Amino acid sequence: MSPLDGPISQLVAAVQTGAVTPKALVAEALARAEARNPAINAICQINPHALTEAENVSKRLQTGETLPLAGVPVLIKDNIWVAGLRCAQGSKLFADFIAPQDAEAVTRLRVAGAVIIGISTCSEFACKGATNSPLQGITRNPVNPDLTPGGSSGGSVAAVAAGIVPLALGTDAGGSSRRPPAHTGLCGFKPTQDLIPYGPCHDEPVWGISVICPIARRMEDISLAMQSLAGLEPVPAPMLEIAASSDFGTGQALDRDVAANFDKVLGVLEGAGVSVTQAQIDWPGTIKGHSILPLQCAGLADLYGDIWRETPELFDPAIAGQIETGLSFTGVDVAGAHQISHQMRETLRAALDRYGVIATPTTPCAAWPAAQDAPTRIGGTPAGPRDHAAFTPQINHAGVPALSLPCGTDGDGRPLGLQLIARAGHDAELIALARRLEPLLKEIA
Image (cartoon, rainbow, N blue to C red; front, side, top):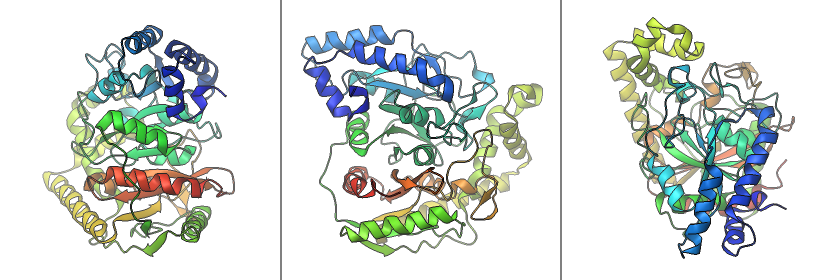
């Protein structure tokens, strides 16, 4: 087995002992990209200096540097700056933009010895739940290329799921690094807000909710990445206790197989000695996950409204629709959405103070056809455009950590995910808990 296919810790050990060189690993990852990317369209740009950068890692090792990610090939989402490479945010508007410097997260990966081999696709401005755009085309799910990997971090998850790289960075402003891993059988971790510095970067439609996230095949790899990205050292697993909610208190319908899978997951965990109680999340009024979408629409309108009016042909029609909607909002509308954001934060943080860790399905549905922006039906009923994201954006507005663990498939073999949510600042404890639960979920079909 190639070191690219095992745990990252074993890959690094092979590099440090001289069993394999960083250049050989990067060359293998590049060869895999050339062979596998055409079928899934996960990578929009290859770093032409990757092999040279791999050789530099070898030189650093020879001087005695300690490099915890020595030789690890990594892909970076197309809205995170990598110096000298194009960062288009999946948009024709930025098709020629070259990042003037690395984002801090990229710098930290380089310091740890990782090698950036290229840029992964994302939806325009990272503002859709599927990864397709007029600039980059359709990104497909390696599990089944007829399906989407989700979005907006679809390129990152597709590349990891296809075995091109063992680690990728995504971003998450409403679930973009939790739902796509769920759709592709991977682990995705959304840290506490600002645990990993977000910039330097393009302007965000909604500041203060997006985070940079590691995506990998196993929680061991996530833990190792977080040590370099945030100095987050492993801790002993906390008490095996979770509070579960199948709909996260939203009333959102679930696909039948998702509901059955969630029940099976809870049964397996209880059978292994995990304490499982029922969580009651009392969202005020009729608040749903999509209730704060006006903030994104208004933010897009503020950033790009004038350009859209002049050159609408440059924009993804779905994003143009969000911009047009945002331009129609009043200040009162936006203030109301900010109030909902605050209520989400207070409600979820209070629930986490009661329960410690809350478990939900990562999504109410499995992956849908790749050319569609969203599923048309969920739970046997017509679905709104953001119903597939019913259980994730609340976490961003609360600023707390969450992750998605693979937990089997539906009847059609489409991967499903278990979302775990913890209190702000309890990232290490959440990762430790997930590492304890992960092997229990391996055999769930």
